[in-house]
Image (tube, rainbow, N blue to C red; front, side, top):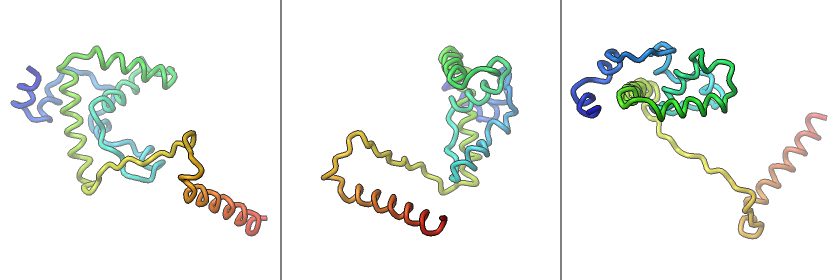
Length: 149
């Protein structure tokens, strides 16, 4: 039934006609956080429905004073128990946030950064990488000793 509703109405209509009580202003919720953007020095990823829900709920008084891990667990359980109408409304909000995100970051494409697992590090097969890390380490030590001391 929620798919039929979303096909008949625009995302803006779905959001404006909801009875859901937002903690944050919708404009604040749609725009990405500036602090994480500044910390990473890269464009933020578009927000998905759960991130929008979590951001709104984390600002509510019922989550104030909780540890981040407790807040995340509590909000995750709340999301699981939410009605389909609320989830559809946050889906519409995510689509709207994606439209706003694509304006300043029109060339944005997410690329996952590779994490190196040093527990499975094989010295002989990764000799070049090992030597590179060794070179960088010694270069830093030399630079530190020569220029800063």
